[in-house]
Image (tube, rainbow, N blue to C red; front, side, top):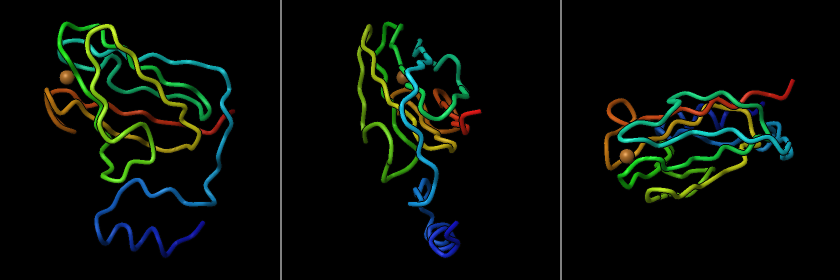
Length: 122
Ligand SMILES: [Cu+2]
């Protein structure tokens, strides 16, 4: 574990820094689903093992998006817009907590937040 970069990152308010020595797990072929409905993510909190593909499916009648909390995201894309019926996916290979939200309908704490907790494979 590298201590100094974490302390530095915390002091300048950066979140989601990926340490090079963090464990990295290959894709395991498992899938988990989060549905975007009008207007929330269901489930709002999801826990998956590292290597799992998380699929977001827009089952609503509104456009939604998926905005990582991290301004320099290490996952998904900076801005994902998806219209009804669309799906996007990402393989989470590093354990951690990944917060996101739909900026059309809220922010990290109100409206349409979501959390992906990625655990080490058992
Ligand atoms: Cu939305």
